[in-house]
Length: 495
Image (cartoon, rainbow, N blue to C red; front, side, top):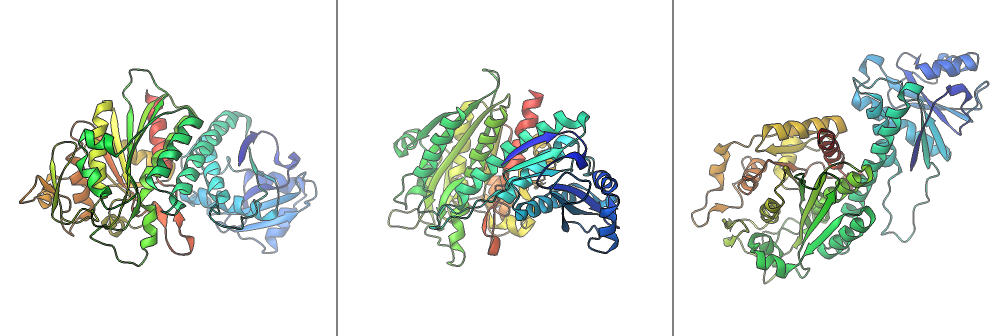
């Protein structure tokens, strides 16, 4: 989808569809007022007849309104004017885009930068319009024999006051780049495990590197054996698919500037291994590589926005399968850091591949490291499907990520990482166990990872509840690409 800005008055804009807002109580937005005057009160006549009350997300389409150059006028319910905050703004924008799609129009003009969204500025509002438009346009049919007919809406224009043109254009560029990154993450997450294997993920990383001019290297099993990545390799033992460690470099900052390192969990299918998962909904374990997908999506967004920042993406990827060679409960493995781990549950495998990737990240002398992983069902119990769990060994870094999540409307919640929880990881036979029992399962998983992140500022995002949806809307969400992109944008601005 393409985006642009335009200044001018709404009644003179010759467009297939122009969308304006109506607040609860049938109060017209500024642009709707302008259209109403130009049409000699026809919009108010429609409202008086009771066709629209201004309820949030409601829409009403009018054709050939006298005195208005647009072919269609789309009235979009905004709800109470005092209640217009970030969530309400996004809902109204989504309703406008969906309704415009259904008209069959090839392009639409939205008068939405004038609408209040809490205290957010024009750039934020434009960015969100681009993001919700990308969400509405997204569909996944690459594995179907009959493809979905392409939706005709290919262009969205924001009608904006002259003073806001620059900010709106910037917001649309940023939103377009982030939306593309989210779509990439969704595509990879939605592919089945027999297609999206570790080798496929490595090839996609090479493709993205070519398109976005990134540096790339892929470590093979023999390279990991030479390094001593015994923890990561133990997870791969039961699979016929060879594991990979993918490393991508985006060099947008000064040559000697320390990079931000993003580490993404890439379990392309998680059966649980010998600690086999229940059969129900096991198909959704193809989504266990959504952390890896979000790293690739964030790097694509970063490259498209040309951020002045150095970023390294590290993706450990493998399947977790049962088999004669698979790791067994009670096995002890030696990680790249030299620390030994008693594997009490082979279904707690994400932390086993991430810990070696975190140790590997030390070589980049990072400014900060953020790992992203569909790590624990316990996080879903704690936070549901609204917020991602956030853990960090540096409060300042946690605050950065929380603020980025709020700004992007891709929110996280700061969880405890107290030493008291480390007690649960004690082992009689190794330096630590890979699980700490049922209590505080998401916390103890983060505590495990923290033992491999002592040499840098580190944060962990547990996205088990936010990376995909189940049920009739089953599919990857593209989260937390927007959060990561906003975090990197702010870091680049400070640099």
